[in-house]
Image 1 (cartoon, rainbow, N blue to C red):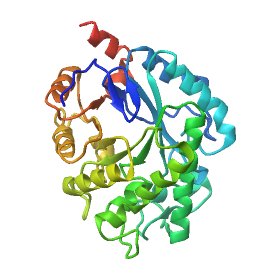
Image 2 (image 1 turned 135 degrees about the vertical axis):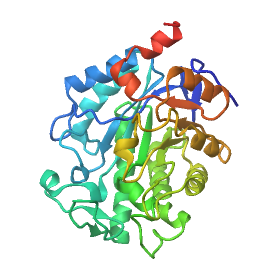
Image 3 (image 1 turned 120 degrees about the vertical axis):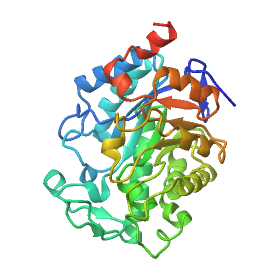
Image 4 (image 1 turned 180 degrees about the vertical axis):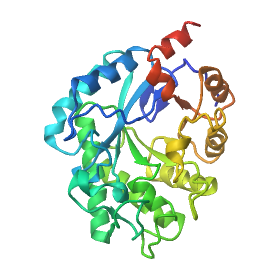
Length: 331
């Protein structure tokens, strides 16, 4: 079904006032030990005030040892709740829906930041990083519990939805991509087995937050340039697995070793991921969130053509938080 940019949309049972989403982007405004600061609250509140339909707070860590950047926020401990609650409230008071992304660095963590060795599904190191310790099945199941716990905390803090970060080059992507997953057990091999961990995460989370709490997942559309990287055909399979498991929406991003250059880069064509979003739309019935150099004009076209259900606009909203209000007013 086609939509227009400023009509309401739904993710699960959550109604969003328009189809514009602020995607999670690392701003580095938390404290060094992962707590919310006033600057962080001010930044996200300003975007909410500007008229965006939903704000997704940047990737919050499910454990301290999984951090990749010095000033990244956390959501794994009771002590994080007061700041996260204030952050969620600051977003919601302007009519935007407040959501938060949850993730972990896996093999991309750095010992000098965390004091711990990196971990990964397979003994493959990220470029210029330490050799990771290979996770046992028991370790993996503990990570499933960590993600579920963080989703539970996010709900308690007042966030109205949670996004699971399985994209870019981070922990859950390291399972989904054959480029980084060479396991031969139940967590490696076929797409279904590589996706097993994301299925187990939502199954465990549902025990804590119930069936109505919106949870969705972000996955790479493809990983060009990476040997055995994710392809769009695999992503379509992952989307179907996610829908069957109970995820409420599917968010596309760009991934693989090139992702830092690709996200919003002028070297990539305008709307370069929207064709992939359209392919995902063909195989699932849950909402699809598109991203990747999309301006207001293109966003309207993508929605009206039925290629996606929501549009994530990152750098545009970073530099101009009033962009949604301006666009709606024809300015």
